[in-house]
Length: 407
Image (cartoon, rainbow, N blue to C red; front, side, top):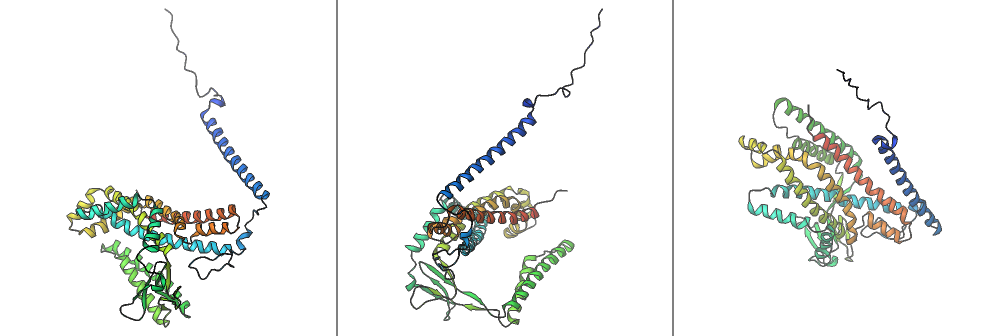
């Protein structure tokens, strides 16, 4: 009887696979080909741009930034046609920042309130919050900006500047608010000669407030008492700052708005033009509708047992949200909220519809006055990129600090 001998299976790993059948090799070749294709396409586009610019005798450098703009920026008396294009860029950055930061504050506060209101057990409050979200979220932000700019201001209830409504400060002779269809005037502060000493005290007040907050936090960790670090820090800062103001004999003085004799401008105070108000309020309210949904979803994502435990120890509704629900919901809500903040900053470019002098409108006007378009657009893109990366960097740092650390 013959005996069958089983041969060992061939060593698959020892066999060499052809390069055109090797998955790893094909993946590397594909990536290299994609990079070469993209770089080649960008080089062709850039070379084509330079060829056309040279054919049209358009400079390709950025020397135009030091040349005068030859136009006036509305509602900016410190800027004149002799100012350089670079100064125009700085004005645009300032105006974009002011609209963006105030819009973010409005969106955060309103979005938080509306998001919580949507979860209210009160039928009327919940329905009103739902109507707000559905109304603003489904209307383009440009339409909302135009509505505020024209329906509220240009053709709205506010009078012309010559007949502006002036509201006094609690019955005094000082004007607290000037309302018209083009500009609003509000009180402001004017720095005095001794303001330098005050700023040193101001910095010390900030350091002291941070120190008090850290102390209260550590005290709470040791003893278990409520830290109230925000309340203590703000109180410390306010006391030191106010004391510094009076110690130096008054670092600031009040400037009250008043309509000029010719009725064409507002003297003194701080002037807000209708374009800024329309852009900021419209974008703040629009973004708040999206933030509200993020807040609502984040609160619902917090385990229900957390709220039940808060109710079991007799916490009031405000305490339940302040100490239990919202701190946990914030960890969930912050990443998508960052995207909404970035969208708000970029949507400030829609202020062009109401003649708000943000960076996009000023760049468009500069190009219309003969400045090279490619370089101007490159500067514009760099500005928005700087805004977006800065906001993302700062908020992502904060996001990492509030996340739970697993052991």
